[in-house]
Length: 191
Image 1 (cartoon, rainbow, N blue to C red):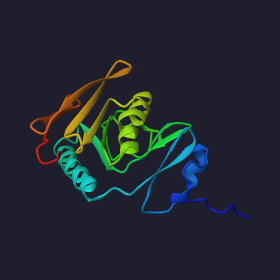
Image 2 (image 1 turned 135 degrees about the horizontal axis):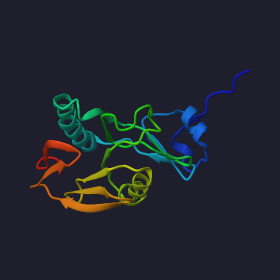
Image 3 (image 1 turned 90 degrees about the vertical axis):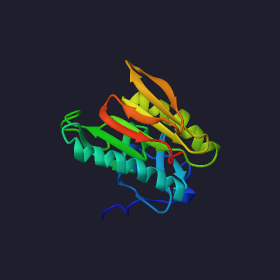
């Protein structure tokens, strides 16, 4: 007799799960569920403004991918990254460059660029600016972009050897990346 599938709900904050248990579980919508230090984190569903901002970014990145198929292999929204055996994250947007990690598949394949749109509240702020920054740096992400409509800025963290170097953009700036030649995303209207 097969074991019933584990259903994770909004009441399971802090539940301890192994990497295999997490990968095989079913998750009750509309919440999102991540895992850090083997414990479930319940994230409220993203609101309208969050979706609008993520959609604008995804549209720019998707158009870039179509125009530059030799540079970008995939642009995903709501992807999955296994940082290590104790931590699983679901970034808002991930960009995978061509031939970067042949043979690796999600969640083991590390995205080259991750975008997170900050949600309301101190826990969401700290998760994106502190916990996820550490996780993505540890995982080997080349560039981590934090889009914060509450503070009206975009924080860009680019890898320099083993650590991230931070820069900040305002709504009058454009997001560009050395990983994505010729890409220009105006931030006016996003922030």
